[in-house]
Image (cartoon, rainbow, N blue to C red; front, side):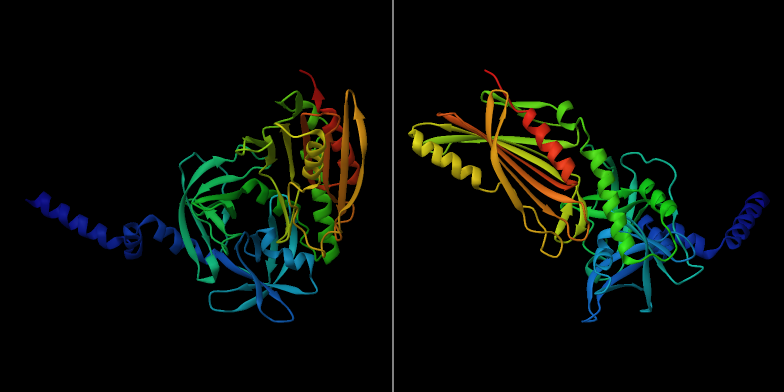
Length: 425
């Protein structure tokens, strides 16, 4: 009996010696605990149009040191970088206090930016050092559609397979306004940065290795607006040397359409699709094949870069005379296959050069169209089209679209592209 009483007394003493808050925290659901501990390290970012005084962009970010340095997405502050005379960036604190933000570094390839607020001794996130296992529970935070700070539970599902630059597949909804916010583990360590979503709880995060590189390489001294444009330009030019490598065309697969071999899946980063169309009572049918990548570089809301796609179309005559078929073939060649975004503030108009080119046994009708970037000198978007000539019953046309390349690189790629098109039954 004495042992029971003593044990009960010891238990009561031990219980009273534990902090009440700790016990309460342990009883909370995991998401509530994570939010309570770490939400104060997440910030709301506004990009404001100076003339109207109204916000033009809403995004999120998070402190990465006690001195006010914040990680966010480049696309959140892109208007400020491209038009510093028209926009400013602000940190909006929970109490409503507004602080100016200055840009310290950009990684346009991974859609990251380092900005700074004039604050000190702020709570900040640490970057996770260990790798994750598929199925790990993560928590994403940010300000969706300006309705307040929110937390979303989701699952780590590894890295995207068809991408040159690593992105984490995160199964949870990341909504507009959460861009630039952190995705953390239960210990409060950042494992990725919210970057994009494709709906149906399919979202993507920038891995922390890119965050570490930006924090290490960013020049924390004050830089002029033009220097950030030079950073973007040099990063895209460096990207072309990796993505549009010299052996890209030569080392890739080919696809056979009719009697022709054409470029197919050039690398694991390309996805390819195909189909055919047989309209009832039509005098011809078509076979289509197209390939593209998931990688792209955000420059502005109207302009993306670093993209490559191509498509082939075979047209088979099933009853037209030569005149009608050649007329159809010509009209299909003129019609644009793809649309390249970009407004007149950012790119010039396309200028085209047409001609006839012979490669081996094949004679092509070609059109080479290019437009330049206004702010990022030396970069171009290119559309190249080619159609096989001298065929009465069928035709093959192809289109190659490239964005964010030097003019010399674009010419070399189109020449290699033509070399990969061969004929042989």
